[in-house]
Image 1 (cartoon, rainbow, N blue to C red):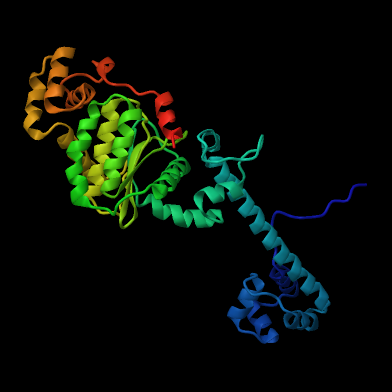
Image 2: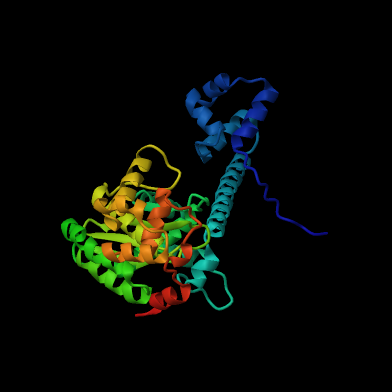
Length: 369
């Protein structure tokens, strides 16, 4: 024979036994409360397990029903143990679900987590990454933090909240470590023309350090964080502190037009909008209005309004586009991207003339001191 400890996956308060006896003896709860010397509400709380059954209660039950008071105390102890076990199991289940929804493979691959050799990341390591001590604390902290972020995501895919949260947290870690002057909106606004010139530099290894330094002088930490599986964000903007802003870029589409439009879009959020706002593709009402404003801001910086009309008369060849791009001081890829967005050309035309980045050079930048 094999003996197994009986641990039911349900809980039953001592009150269930009390109700069984009352039904057997045809005694109403009102009559029982009078005999027991407690109010109806107090009896209701005792019967349904909201009030703990004490030795005083147990001895009253012994005198009324004849069953020994030790039976009732044992019944109460079992119920409380079952409750604790049930809560512990529920907590373990929720923890494992939370862990399973994190993009752990990418978090390890990108170096965000460093578990032991041949071991999977555990809860403790993930808590340390998010700077929390429990899943409940993570919910409280990151539900609030997600409300401070502004996203540009692809409409073609649904994002996974924990993947976005992990991406944001990595950006926060890097942004917090970055040295910056205090936030200065006027200085940041004035620097955008200088930043705009960087669009003509082809290599991220060359333009990213310059971009980072210009923004840091105005109180903006610029970080590049590769998006993990389930995170479709191209960029986000938020304030880490009242005196320090953050722009995070994912290089998701690896083309110059998309990268730079994302940067200036996020810059628009920092300069135009309130700090405690969330922007995620698919939201309606004010979020879509604010996204439109950030889009218009980015478009106006990249191709000023006095040059917009010229987009309709550019010769649709490399020479015509390159001449116009050089004339207004941006990359040809940005001109092509704006013509595609305006409907002048279809989205599948002239993409070969955009400047394309590689993960090799971006990773080289990320690994540099």
